[in-house]
Length: 443
Image 1 (cartoon, helix red, strand yellow):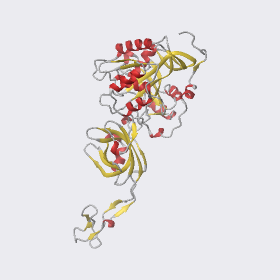
Image 2 (cartoon, helix red, strand yellow; image 1 turned 120 degrees about the horizontal axis):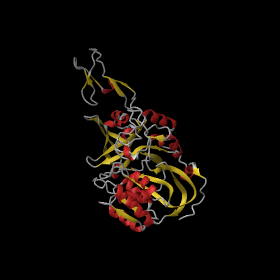
Image 3 (cartoon, rainbow, N blue to C red; image 1 turned 30 degrees about the horizontal axis):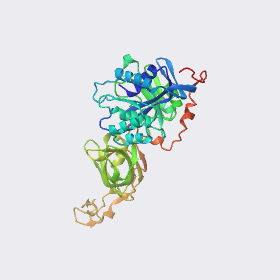
Image 4 (spheres, rainbow, N blue to C red; image 1 turned 30 degrees about the vertical axis):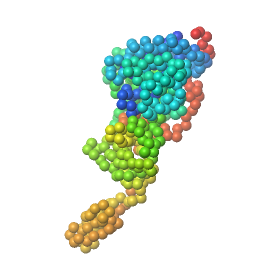
């Protein structure tokens, strides 16, 4: 199944109320061991709409409208409808399917989102927060889905992105998706405000999921108006529905700046330090090195699928200054590097050639780290400085990212750093409006 597809089903089912604002797609801590594939939760506001309405989707050839403002719906009616949809569509036979449903006119505290996107939260903390806001809730099976439900409702968008999700016709779900790669490249080029569309090197189409779920494709970006236009460039099988979500994807909100001493398992961290042990490449091409700051030392892992970032990691040297972004593994306790910024290189030059013996004219042999060189023929010794050297050329100062196919939903691409964000209301005002509706009279 697919969590976001429930939004389509609920909007279609709860037709006696209006949708207020954009549906929200919130990704949570990707390091939780019992998470679903994308660790996603959705949150929607239903009520009696006020003001202009905008089209944010299409379901079965009928437009989906949303109001900027409105009065809340009756929570018990929404709860009953949502529970009915979950029971009818969730794949309860799947071990990792443990949905949670929360309906409330009050939001959980914003800190609850931050705790859930970065740490491991106990379900008793969720129930306490739900009780505080007088929410109506239901935890199915082991009830862990309540954690995501509450966190999605607690999210107050600061940095944020948008995703337009198109869904397949029911009879096609489970079959091979028909997407034209050339059209995805054209879309990616035409709208640079979008991201994570296609890997230009491998040809991997990143807008399509790998699982047999109802999603046809999802286009992510910073401007939802561009998403509306971008979807029309993509040549694919005809979707049954599409919907625009407000999301925390591409924000790095799962990462926290830490000192090494404070690093905890299963959390995302940003570490600023120096390389303290030179890289070691093991079978399979995975690279490991150590970094330190004044509080301690930790091992960093850059795995083979990381592409150019792995190549750069192999050329790091002692004393190089880097910032590592990544997630903390439990066994072994180390950082799985998600991206890396090389700040400064040590000034030791690279050795290009062993020195040549002035007596014999032959290249000399190293006699150990920092011990110098010796001629194998005549025994002449020279210091380490006798080797021919050249200034270091690798790695270059700057950012290193893995291929698009290796990035998580919350991964913030470097192209988004420093981006200026317009207020959400200002952006929504640019959507196509239905000028015929100024106020919803019926309840």
